[in-house]
Image 1 (tube, rainbow, N blue to C red):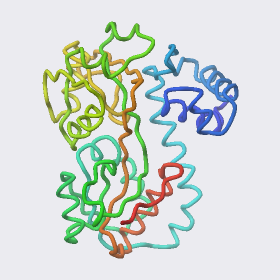
Image 2: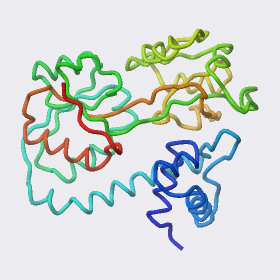
Image 3: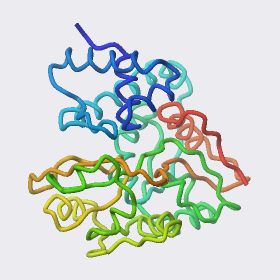
Image 4: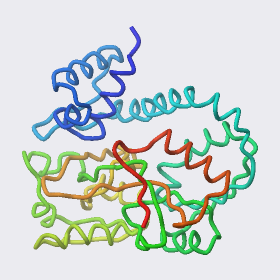
Length: 307
């Protein structure tokens, strides 16, 4: 028996939310329907996709791998629906596209590959830059459009944006850490542990904002711009961290496991999306790219933000 699109869609919802009950609310279906779909999917695949615990669920290693393929399934379905219209458009021109480090490493490459395949006459000019440089480049006209962390945009008067994905931030821990035995983990609990702080793409500034809403502060042992350095240090037991599911991988480069659990306190999502200069008409190639990305990955309920 092959998995159904419904089962895969329910699986993705649970993986993104970390809770069956929340996924059911987001999908507007019963919790039992989601539970049954996940159980059937695991039986078809022949391996557990989630690790169950009192706080919800986390992906197993096999679940993490399956999620990557499952997301591509839905993108492929959308491409099949839109491909006839796209092939008729025969869009051409140059696309000056800027992206931040996190987007370039953990989000955009498969989308770029599909866009290039469906729009072969568009010439891509790709630039990796900081959030500040992308914002100024969009305003000055150096870039046509950017893919960046829309939750970090500062110049919201000059920059319009549309969120494509919201990635939950959760706590990363080494295997057998004592906090894994807790039913609920708060920022107060995190503040008592050594902390590995990621700095790239304004990550430390974002963390500071939600820590400032509490009376606690992380005990920062090490600051780094490398996600892989954070992963390795957490996996080796040097400290813990809070990062988004988008950059989570269960294994460090040394083959040590990183566990992930939710935080009880409010922690904002990391939002990824498109950004462009406000009140400026996008060139044809940039408009085609924006339409392609929106059709592929737009977050439910999100509208474009224009000043």
